[in-house]
Length: 333
Image (tube, helix red, strand yellow):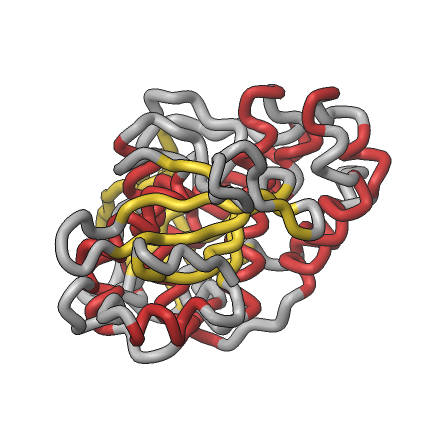
């Protein structure tokens, strides 16, 4: 299974990234946190993150994020909330499968190219060590690990690793001494990493609500990548959503599953597949339905018989996928 190691630098990237990347970095962190909370196994966090950040004077706290929040996003992102998300990620207990396996290597020669930079020059040695640990995990333990890091130049997609190994624990096969060489994939966006997965296959195999949500995230990430977007919307599913999927033959394996899946993923990615229209509270179509600050919207799933629609709410940049319904009913829950 493909996994990605989140570097310390990426975790605190909202404290120093360019303003045009700020929102996508926050969305990535929220997606990572949500995946870890539901027991997802794609994410590995760099070891002793909080200790390392504290030593660098980047311990996740509100003041370090407050300085960099773009004015236009200040009402949506609280420095305290960002710090809490980062702290929660760094503090989460994970099982062995979501940890870097222990490896020790001794080298005559070791070359890493290019050298990654971090949040400060003191991170140079730590980043080189992380690259070595990931390389060894892939080489000795047959993992399929990448690195999620910031800052990262746009043209850097991988890190080349070359070494003349004299001894290692555990021992390599064939045993050292030997020359080893390979590359470690590196990403600047968690959305880019997720786009590498087959979302349609994940939806087709989904048997639980969490697996369905995960498939939406994968599909939205792929669509966002295709359209040059930096991330996907933060979204949740309403209480009636999963029942409505089954009722209207849109759940995995059902008649309209593929079509509904594609439309929902486009909504989460913030890309229109079909026109998105407000849901109105009056026949004259003058007043959009608003509930507790949430605005109601709809879009096509199918245009024939039956004519199915997807209803959803938007609230301060967050999407709540409400329900699937028939055109003649057009109810939002």
